Length: 460
Image (cartoon, rainbow, N blue to C red):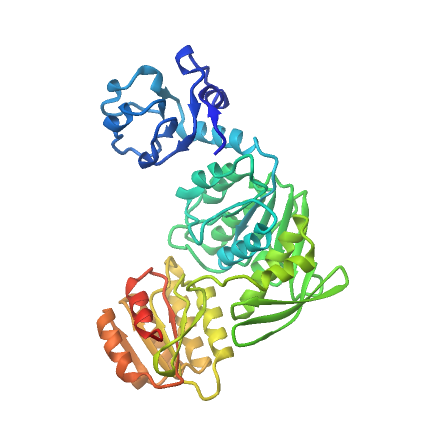
């Protein structure tokens, strides 16, 4: 964070500082009470107990609130900044802080591919630029303010994921970051537990354009039907597309798998370029090309960006291929499970499996589907059979919903198993797995049992 004076923060919120509030140095602005240290402004967004005793030992701590709180009278009056609307005051500050820095800010959204695309772009940039970015897949709205405050005078470019799990998330994220470049990777059913219809989910994602004030540069997946159908008529900036489509600006001409990654070719401005990206699957090629498009818009030389991607370290648990014990190949794809990512994972498994390998899928629940749950589990069950998965193992009560449609589509019921605990699954796999099997793990429930079983199967 760039150090500010308290009166600068107050003025940004349309508050006139009093004499005791002038000249106070602020080094931290936070919404987390555990991050209160000397020289802090704390926005009290959540009605939780404030650590008064600790605050009284610190110099220059100020609390922004829209209602009184317990033991408030133990603090000096100048430490309490009373406002009418707390969120409105916070966003006045975030707008002020963000616009202190004339830097490009990239916002990456979509159902799948956000984290990988962001990490690829960050990897391309970080050799020559000071990059502030989302950490791993930590993209919940709680992190928005800390990520914004990580921008300082040395930051050259920022790359943030703008995820949504409920209505209003995209608008709020943009009130922190004010992106100049927006990316939509692809769209499919997700988070329809809180956003009840898929159309509303798509509309929420599309609000990235409003969040960009309908200007800047928008990077869109030309091959995704839901992205291509977005109404961009109000967007007055530049639109760049990627994909296999003949009209895509960054056109994917072809790709092929090798043992640990993807060789691909793209065409841009009538020139053909060859590249390689560690990590398997067609989706990784799309993520790579998306990151290349953003890098070029940011002024990076395309051949340099392609070369940088060849040294990218693939993200953990994102279709991570692991050498298992006794000649077994383990695929850890447990970062998330929604219909799109499960379909992609299973298709990639089918693509890389050798003809003599037994394909085994270990599935936990898909997350946050709401009314689309039955339909999506049925689709996934049929897909398992269509791709020739020989063995289906489910973990957890909800994951049983894969079983009936999978059996109806042709999976042998004698090759379907269900477990509730990691220990029983480990015991079963120890006796069941054969050399040369390939076993794929996928869950959306952040179930530690999956990590435990995968670690158990790793080659020593």
